[in-house]
Length: 337
Image (cartoon, rainbow, N blue to C red; front, side):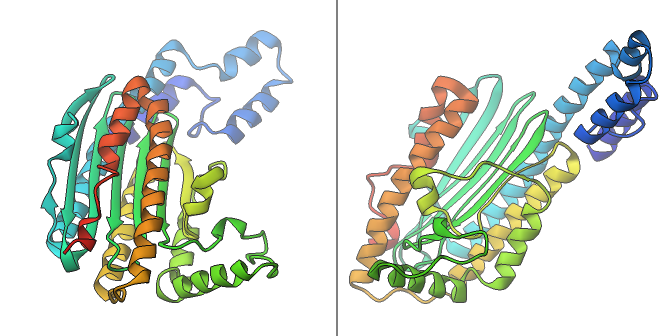
């Protein structure tokens, strides 16, 4: 797929004329326009407007990217799920089939959704693997909710590929409120003004020692640096996000697809490592408070996904979000054994 896309781009550039001597970008289009300003209007317009064949070529490239990305992302995610199944003894859930989303058509795309859980010490409350492949857009999403027996952060990893960008979202969601959304440009969290500030600082310090280490921060920063940041989260969504959140648009291309797939694989490896090394929470109030916080977070995440999927898939978006989120009124299996 990489070779085919590269060849298509090469042929496309030759067809587009001398004005496109490199893959088009905002900076290149701006510089082409500036160079053309000294020419007569008819010649200037001709020098940087692609031919009809070239414009069709752009569509062919984007469709090839969506198709090849679906295979790359879907294959990568399948490998990740196989590793988690083996490591945490996941058992298949019938919920996607009950909701009509185990194998489905949505718009002009085909999709599959698998769901799993693991009771007792394996402590996986919900795992969903969603893949959707269409002619001009594809999506792969992995959600991992840890049960309340341990306070390992939840993982949400999602990649959406269109003709214009590769959108990557990765978030490790903390299991207690740490006021991460108050982080300032200097990296600090302000001065203490209330008693709660010290509680939130305690949450951040504990998470930084066990999960959100300097190495993890550097990993997330290196990926963020490869793309353009999305608008900051607002409302409750901002309250539940962790400090490692990656929410960026990458340039459309096979390299970005590979980067996104690798980032999601590495995030899952980090999560599995934490699950293997984190001691269970002591029975009592800590488990109860973790469960209560998770319940609110999971409901909030469902609301976010309703908006996200509805923007992509219209009226079917809400039902898809419900199937992907799982039964919100079901007690965590990790706390029931």
